[in-house]
Structure formats: structure tokens, C-alpha cells
Image (tube, rainbow, N blue to C red; front, side, top):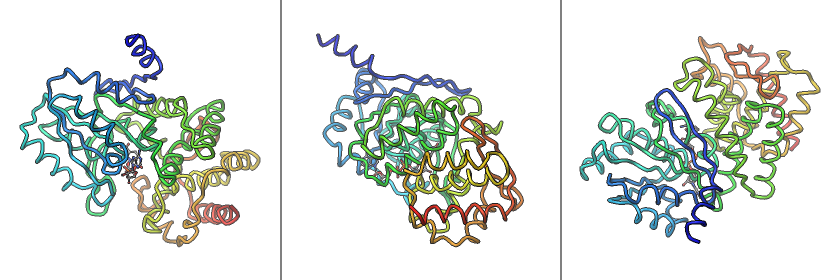
Length: 374
Ligand SMILES: NC(=O)c1ccc[n+]([C@@H]2O[C@H](COP(=O)([O-])OP(=O)(O)OC[C@H]3O[C@@H](n4cnc5c(N)ncnc54)[C@H](O)[C@@H]3O)[C@@H](O)[C@H]2O)c1
């Protein structure tokens, strides 16, 4: 009976295989998938350092205590996830624990939290003794659909986001949907922004499924494993073909992001990244119409399809010339020229598209008008 239950649980879990040049690994998705972690690691003899997001630990204490207890020779490090703490100093604190406890290349790190814990822990793993294993257990919507997969690790430096980092893939990713029950709305919006971009990285059919999945998340707080798996598969397909952002393909994941980073910087990060991405994708679609990649009818259809997404009114307080200044200094732009990722339809993405300042101003005016009316 117990065995049957066990298999039932295994069968219910979705598994995605990621094949990159540097490593192949699995992503396991399901309710309570961290139980898989416990059963897989119970007998392993290597030591483990669990880096736990402070809020996640507070909200899921008994479940996490149980997980840590079940793993052999395990230690915990509680981490307060803020962009201010996403630093080399925090990485050093992890090195100190590893050193003090004689961690070797046989041992590993486990990141439990959102993208910040994942990026910091991944970077510590990538650099300690030239690389030790690490596992990702993402707990925010954003980290489930995006940051836990793909191997980008790193920290902020000298006020520049993610300036120091490496590409270093995890050993395995356990996406446990049950963590989302405690996620605040703001963080849900943040994940929604990244899911929105996948609607355009896919085909017409998936575009509709992603739109409906997003509606279910925002209106009914319903998190569909299928939707999360779909997003991970889309990210995996990109990462597998351009692991280190060399061919340019990986740039398609930046749809809406040049606008988004400029919005965030101009209003001093008073909005969540995903909220900025939502507005950024709207603005990019407006640009796509203006440069002739899509017609007016299709633009209106795409905008109305996603009008239910939250548009943060803080954005309209941003100074338009400041936004343009930030966009020119974006690492994706070259020699002061603004280069954008644009979409002509779901599945058709253009990278490195040069766009004039005049068109950016036009898009900002139209976007601000839309935000003003919602
Ligand atoms: N590596 C990548 O490919 C990649 C991709 C996108 C973003 N990122 C990075 O990810 C970071 C953002 O990640 P994020 O949005 O997951 O934010 P985060 O890690 O800052 O977490 C957001 C907040 O949610 C809390 N939290 C986490 N899980 C929770 C839960 N289940 N219940 C209640 N509260 C919970 C955290 O304590 C924190 O306060 C940024 O630093 C960004 O640069 C990395």
C-alpha cells in the first residue's frame, strides 16, 4: 500500500530533462516534490548546507526542519533575501561556513527560496573549491518558472545588478508548488511578468494556454503545474541551445526587459521587477506595431488579451527622458543606441532591433495612457 502510494506520488510528479553543454539535469515539479529530495538524499554520505530564505523558513518551518533532519550531515544557514544582501559579502559568509565545517567537493549546497537565495547560493557553489554541487528548491513563482533553471548565478556589485556571476547549472531542481500558498500578491505579480513573456516565446496554442493560466493565477490564486512546466520547458529549450548567451538566442528571454530595467531604475525600484516586465512587454508590443512588425488589429488583440495583468501606476511617475537615458545605458544596447527584443507574433521574436528615440517616446506615451485608464 505504502509502495503504491509512493509510485502514485512519483507518477504525479512532472519531470523535465534539461540538456546543456555543461550538464544534464532534471527538474521535478509537483505538490510536495521536496519529499523527493528527502528520499533521494537520505542515504547520500556527503554533507549539505541548506541556505534557507528567512521568510520561507518562518512560514514553512516544520516542513523544512523535517527535510533538513532527513538529510545526512546537514547544516542550515538562514538568509535574509534582499537585493542589498545579494552581495559578495553574503557569498563569503557561505564560504566561511563551508570552510569551518570542512566541506569538500563531495559535499553540496541546497538553495531554498526565491531568485536571490538561488543566485547567491549558486554562485557560492560555482566558486567554492572551483565548483561543488548545488540543488535548487525555488519557492517564488518567478524562481520556479525562471531563475532556478538555466544556471545563471551571481551577485550585485557596486550598485550594478548581477555584475559578478557565472554560468553554473544545478544538479537538480525541485519545484514544490505547495510553497506558493504563502507567497504575497506582489511576488505573484512578479512571477506573472516573467510568465507573460513566455506567451510570446511560444506558439499560438501555448499563447492562449499561458494567458488562461495567468488569469487563473491572478483571479483565483490557482497555480497550475502544467503552466509552470510549460514555462520551464520553454526556458530549457532556449538555455539548451545557448547556455552562455553566445549565439544570441538566450536574448529572447529579455522581451520587455530593457524597458523594465529602465522603469525600475528611474523610480528607484519602488515596483517589483515582474510588474516592470509586464509594462515593458506592453511597451515593446507598441514599438513592434510602430516599426511595422505587427498590424494595429493584432496589437489591440495582444494588449486586450492581457489587460487583466496588473499595471503599476507608479510607472507613470517616471521621468520619460530618464527612462530613455537608462535604456541607452542598458547592457543590451550598444554605443548609446537602443536595441530591443521585439515580437511580431507568438513564436516570432526579433533580437537586437535598433529603435529610434522618437519611437521609444511614442511607446512610452501610449503605455502611460493605457496605465492611466486601468
Ligand atoms: N538566475 C536567473 O536566471 C534569474 C532570472 C530572473 C531573476 N533572477 C534574480 O532573481 C531575483 C528575484 O527573485 P524573486 O522574485 O524570487 O525574489 P526574492 O528571492 O527576493 O523573493 C521575494 C520575497 O519573497 C519571499 N518569499 C520567497 N518565497 C516565499 C514563499 N513561498 N512564501 C512567502 N514569501 C516568500 C522572500 O523572503 C522575499 O522577501 C533577482 O535578484 C533577480 O536578479 C535571476
